[in-house]
Length: 237
Image (cartoon, one colour):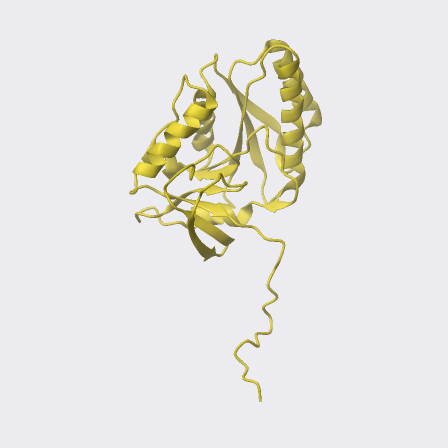
């Protein structure tokens, strides 16, 4: 399987709010380690936006202490911006990630993963998506959708997914897998704005550009079809 870089953006303001957010981020990262399964390791990159230094040092030391070998490698890389917003952090993290691999998992630092999730089928889907077609897939959303979204249900080797229509927050800053083709077409995130505005601007850009790669919303299910014996076409006698 192709390599994947996990990009996690962080910002821990001074005081108790920042301390709590740092702890929650550590818990989120621990949940990714427990539950993301595939047959290869992938590298964690922390893209920070000028966190309070005390909180930042506590966070990175705790991350080093907790890091096991295996699914997320014990080493991790860091980029730090000076309060330029989550867009700048994402741009920096994604630039570094795409120097290594064609895909990035943006695993948002305040979203924990509650159950096992096999990333490999969706990585393969992005690898196999044709790059020369108008509606190639460039992003697979792996978390809950935003309200009001619509789309077309399709079946892939990876499983069921909704090919999202281009309105509302079809694009969103929730956990998702990205291919580099997505940003080669749509460009970088807005910098110097808050997270809501950064998300809104990119969502509008995606909505009004119908020529670029599509977004899928993965629809994982705990049910698995046992398909060794098919009897649906047997007529009753």
